[in-house]
Length: 280
Image 1 (cartoon, rainbow, N blue to C red):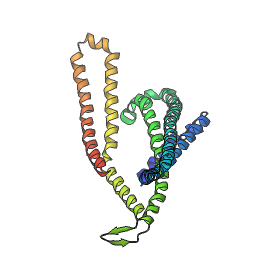
Image 2: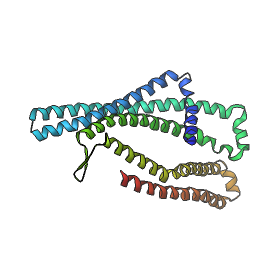
Image 3: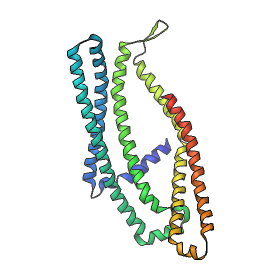
Image 4: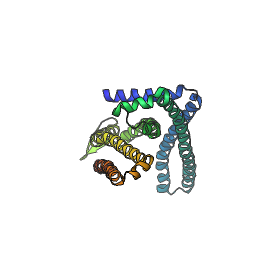
C-alpha cells in the first residue's frame, strides 16, 4: 500500500505542473472533454446492455414493430458510440501532444541550464540516458497516465452501473443449488467482485516482474542506441585506427543484453497471457 501511495504521489507531482502552467486552460478543457466522452461511452454500454434484452424479447415475441424500433435504436447508439470513440482518441492525442510539448520544453530547460547536462555525466548511472528520458519517457508517462487514469475512472463508473443491474438480476433470479434456494442479497454482485478481485491479485503476482524487465529493456535499448550514435560520430577515428572489428564486437555485446532481456519479457508475458486468456 505504501508503494502505491508513493507511486500516486510521484505521478501527481509530475502531472500537476502542466495543469497549473500557462497552457493550463486548454489542457483542462481537453482533459474534461476526454473524461466526459469516457463517461458517455460507459452510458452507451449500459444502454446497449438494456437494448440487448429488449431486442431479443422482440424477436421471441415476433413483434415486427418492436423489432424495427429496437434496430433503429441500435443504429443510433452505434453511430453515437463511433463518433464518441473517434473524438475521444482525437482529443486524447491532442492533449498528449500539448502536454508533451510543455514537459519537453521544461525538462530541456532544466537539462541545459547551468551545465547540468555535463554534471549529470559526472554522476554516472545516477541519471542514465537523459536524452531518452526526455525523448521517450515523457511521452510514455503522459500516454500511460491518461490511458490508465481515464480508463480507471470509466471502469469504476461501469462497475457502479452494472452493480445495479446485477443486483436487480439477483432479486429476479435467486440462487438455487440442487433445488435449494439461498437468499443471498445481490449474490451476483458479490460473485463478480470476488472473481474480479482474485483475478486482479493473480494477474499482479504473475505480471509484476514485467515492470522491472520493461524498465531494464528501455535502458538496454538506450545504451545500444547511444553506442551506435557514438560510432557514427567517431567514424573517422575508427576508420583510421581500423577499429571496426572491435566496435562491432562491442555493439553486439550491447545488443546481446537487449536480446536476453527481451527473451525474459517474452517468457513472463507468455505466462501472463496464459492466465489472463484462461481466466477471462
